[in-house]
Image (tube, rainbow, N blue to C red; front, side, top):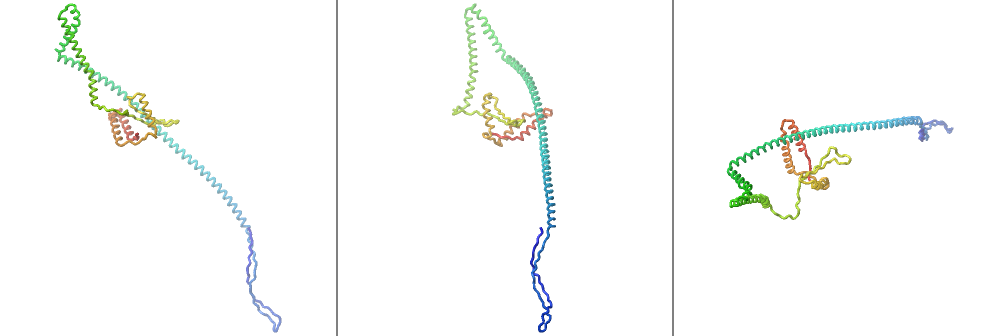
Length: 361
């Protein structure tokens, strides 16, 4: 806006002039000099209306520019947010799509591998069944051949023994035919016909012989029956009789396994499969009675304390496992197709065993 500013200044002045003075003795003019300062009041008026108008116009332009910048900034922010959302959505959709496709491919590959393994197992099962039937047939043929052989050997042995002790066998046959059979068949008639000393003597001899044979038979049966008593006495002589203060526990081998099922966790149902293996000598009631507390104990994480097995135990287990595998796949070097499949199963089994990781109680 316009304004006025007053100022007070001192203005110096000086000069000389000629003055006349009145007549006197002589009268005349006199040159007089003068000097001094005189105050002066100055008022300065500043007219700012044009500048104010210019400033107002500039402010209006600046406000319009500010509004345009703000609008542009908002549009740019909105565009950046939209672009960011689209880029993020594209990245997420692409990432999850890629992962989904990869998982689908892996599932298909695993499904194909599992189906191939199942097919291989079925083929091997058929091969095992055929091999079992073939072995049974071979065993029956070998058994029949050896049965015939042993029967012929028994017959030949009987003939040779008979030839070696032929007089004794003939004497035994004659005695049996004459003293036992003929005596038994003809004694009744002789008792009615001939009542003499010879009949009584023959009867006594027959009775004595029968008595002796019965005594030998009873003695043989007694020795056979007492054989078990003697064996029991010998076994008891090896044992030490010690009193037992309390009932001693009977230890049985038990295998408890936990495995992941192919279905996984669905509908609140755990995708785990638990199995308890017990000896076949136990009854179904005993197996159920023993497996129930074992299952509860092994599936309770607070009660069961699992740990890594000791190195010595792992070495023994590895040794026994390799012995069983070598015995099972002894024919894996066969160049036939069956041998090649066994070789693949053997290699896969050893690979799984090398990658093993398990805990023990």
